Length: 533
Image 1 (cartoon, rainbow, N blue to C red):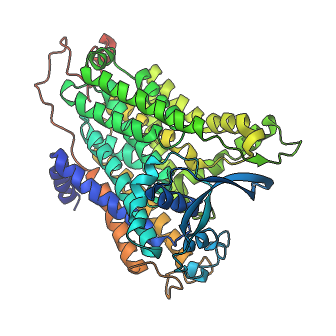
Image 2 (cartoon, rainbow, N blue to C red; image 1 turned 180 degrees about the horizontal axis):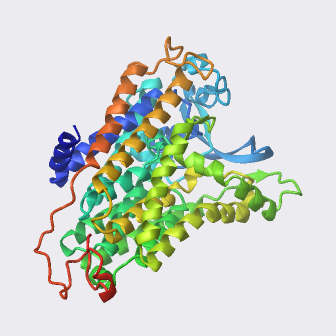
Image 3 (cartoon, helix red, strand yellow; image 1 turned 90 degrees about the horizontal axis):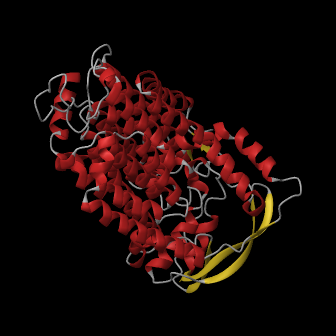
């Protein structure tokens, strides 16, 4: 059976176009399963993003500022929302989830049916200040299809958009010489939360997917240089960077962090090759222009919200509370669904970190000191970045941090660790095929378990039948259909990881000759290790 899967995987990865197409289809299936098995309004703040997308599709890039009383993390305030003109039934989106959100025992069947009034009224959204580009991509179905079908179509468009970014990342991972471990590292970066957010109308989905694409392009560009692949890697880096930077203001920080970490892992010859390429300067100008446009939009749309911050809530207290919540944020990055009221099962939280830790240990044990330092630095950022971000904004916005906000950068941890392992771990001495096979199986089980657990919560509630029968709430098409589809999609990704390593394009060099782009300028003391790319 394993040999059969390996032959299938080898056939897929040997053609970049075929690999992209199959990967794209698998990600569409996974994202669509989340899109259609999640009740409308059942994801964080999605109603605000749906309203924003529908308004942008109608040409309403801006609207009137409306101050709305709201409470975040126990703090009252007046939040600046944006009023737009939409059909009246859009108003009902903000309250459809209230009967089951934060009540895990209650299934989604209690949500009232969506109205049908097409009368144009003012509807407010908390996402009115966000960059409109993403909303223009996903909002157009609302012009042609009304009601819940149109909302589900917007979700599916977002899933397709994210699938295209992630499929390009799979192709980038398959271009490495030791591609099995790189694809396994990519799968470790694609947490259930990543796939879940990709299926919702929420800028976090494409933000995380773009972060994956940036890391998948930047790491081989500097760690495994290849002149014949440079232009396509620059294309991936440029597209991922433009999407990431134009989602939220923090996107520029995540993009810079990924590039800097990749530069710290670089070979000396790689930087010269990248700088001397004309396409580098072209993409640099495009990224600079995209950054300028994103910053101009953010500066022209400041947040005028006013929150009543208690006297005891100082930046130091905010830093302490954020540090104490570090494990909560890690759980949210792996899998915490709904309105952060549906945590993944214990098996997901046990197996997923185990796979990531394995990659980290390989990188720390076999990597050079500089490479180990970069991996450790990313691990430290996992804790310190939320602390610094929350402390700096504590007196303005209160405690609002969530794990998914850091995920566009943290997807680089397993990918960077896998890259170091791919370059430095000797080909002998480790049962590589078995190791990658167990990693793929572990991540697939953890991924499917998270989906099943969330599906059960939505259909019968945590107090309902363990085997989801009979279902109180049923998604379009039936829950069994999407369970089978998700299992097949996750298994398909695992099969791709079983592909054999790429055959070197040139004969093996003599011991004293420089090897190809992935191993140029090795120091003499490193030649004793088996050179792999």
